[in-house]
Length: 520
Length: 45
Image 1 (cartoon, rainbow over the protein chains, first blue to last red):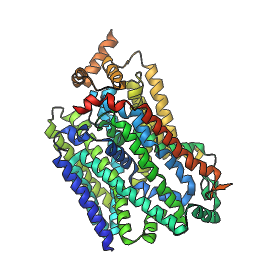
Image 2: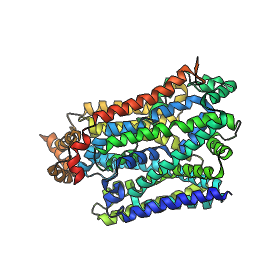
Image 3: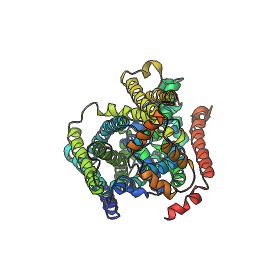
Image 4: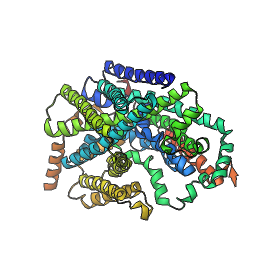
């Protein structure tokens, strides 16, 4: 194997572990809020880039390139939505979610839902669904990371997988959210440099953008249209809407992504974070798809299009640059895997263990339990990843659709619609998850040409509105929660008296108040 | 009809969508220009 490539990878691993150690020393694990949300003191640039890298995963280097290679400029529909996904998140729910989550005293995205829509069933269902889906997602990232390491180092897969998993676990274990956020920031820079380097190398090789397009036209002009190879997607607006939605409004409903709002330094952080997200996305997001399109000219007829970006890098770049690109690919995988691992561990600790088994656990105990669960999930994931179960990647494909469909209306309505109540949220989460799952599982898209994400979001939104309105008289939103939603909409710091009041807001007290109001 | 070797439709979408998100971001920045000042007291604490 190439020594230069190895040096780059080792350097990269040393830096991420160093960030983990720095986060530990900076108090990243001092208390539960510190471990789960970095003490709610993350600035705009880091917030924006941890949100972006968490939502993107290894897909941007494997799936995006493959899609461009197979379908030409049609692939860019995914990028068109994705470019605005970050700013949409920060502008729609960022400020309000940051403020109301502090008022609720919520530390996880699922706990936040339970405090807004008081219901133990909601927390059990949402927590279990999220752990299940994010668990598969973590597994897929582990497999991708292990394979990437094996490819670069020439090591046998089990050893490569062990190294990749150990590094992710070590820095997540040490510094919690603080370590994850700052390693994501570092990884976003590596990813950007890596992908732009390949892009400029391929443009240089092909004589520029226009020349490359003219060469594609000579092979197959349909690849230059936005309708796919042989115009296969022409008029399929349901599929195109799904491509636009999944990475734009889609991640308004992903628990591991919206947690980023809760960890911001201030509600005002959302403003600059939105700008950072757009700038980074404009540079990064369309590029892997375009590299995939132009790879048709550089490496025609490859057997596995998912390797298009790897192959282009290997063919066009010097060894040192290839090392950087390999580090970028590992960064894309690891920046998602660390966030997923931390979220899965913390939801299991806070939303299941503490909520239902040990409500009196101390802060130190909970940090210990969260860390132990992160470790246990990683070890469990390692052994499953060793056998590479065949269905993992297909589950991941619709995990994102199911999560977005299930939770999007619940998170958006939590801060924007006062009539959104517990039965409405329960119906919305259940309907969205079920419709998106069945739509994908039964391949309904093949005869309706409507993407699972579109069907899931439309049905969960209808369920939220219809059920909330129909049950409004019987299950009104409590006065305490209405006051907090009002406060969250105001552009001002949280008044001290409200912080004290909200700390006394428990699910039981809200349920009791709701019960008394019904009796009246 | 081609521009930069691309059909007009593809070219305008490639330019149009990023432009839309840039404008969206600028409008968001403008409409939230007072946020930092209004949350200032809390940030200092």
